[in-house]
Image 1 (tube, helix red, strand yellow):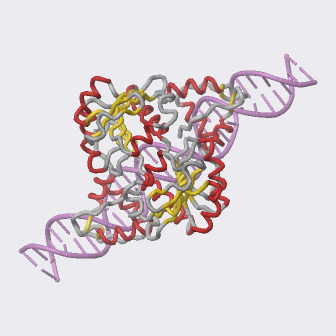
Image 2: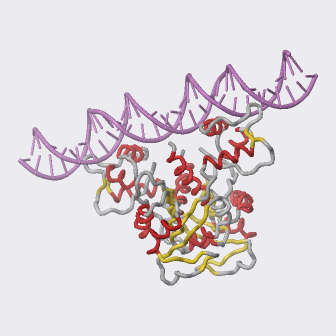
Image 3: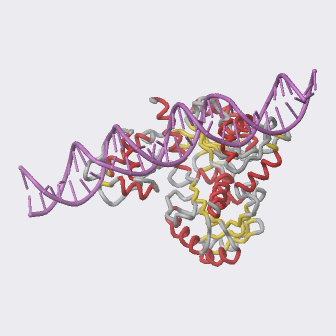
Length: 192
Length: 192
DNA sequence: AGACGCTTGTGAAAAGCTTCACAAGAAAGT
DNA sequence: ACTTTCTTGTGAAGCTTTTCACAAGCGTCT
């Protein structure tokens, strides 16, 4: 399981230290990293700088991803304001919404565009990812339209399981499901 | 892998049908469910009503979870407005924030309380879960204070890995990490 | 140079998870 | 009652992931 390493004081870091931060084991860290080539130094550990560079490449962070945000409601605005969105290599190239009252509204330097333009925006702006911050009822349709227009991945905040071709990765973020996972763990913990 | 079943037309449902919805296999569904006792009927499938009841119990949804929302910023407000929050058994019993300008503001029928009251609110209102919608820099401290005051689980929206005792489950929701997972998958897909 | 303390990379073993396959049970039709 | 049609529950087989264990490499100290 890959875990992200934040900048650390030392110049090198051992699998042991990484494991503690990442809530996993040293062997696990070594095995994970070894899949991408062996760039650790025996007796020393991994160079923090090199590790950062490698991870950036492994995770595909050596490029800027062009993202379109669909849905300018509360979740949409929370995401848009997210501090290190841009810093981490994600460029929100457009915001669309289906509510006529919202269209034309300015968010920073972006103007909210009508939902009908989704396909053309994806193509013109070469967007690779879409973030679905729309109601559950609209999610499937928006997902299909996005994929047909050439999007490569979807981050889905709508509380439904969307169906897309197998080669399009979808990450789901669902508040209620996360809470259910918690309540499940707490409930199980009582009688293990 | 447990998947949630939404209300369906029929009175019974087969593992096959569940599998299609849940993006898994029939054998998988049967094995999962069999861990919690065998309540399917051979030749018929599972009674939808019984399945719902069982899942409610398995997931700990047969009780109402008392939740305190820490952080009344954009993410906090997006969560607070989340439609089926209450319906699904989560009762937001308090909202706290450290910004003096926000304290006293009304959100629905809740009044935003000062962050100093966190511990007393947890105890008085018997909160079991906290949602951390605070900046990364504040997350660890709030988590520790919450756990010390008796919270049993944490939903963490701050982009840091928080450290708490092993018996306290933490679910992390981190926009950037989800996006990184997507970019990783897309990048890998090119050269598998 | 040699000994020592660390730490990686990686086979091999262990554990966990998924799929297969099929006996056994339940309804419905004959 | 018997046959047919479904579908569960579960051992066994197959596959994946995690952990163990240790040779080999690197730096330091004497």
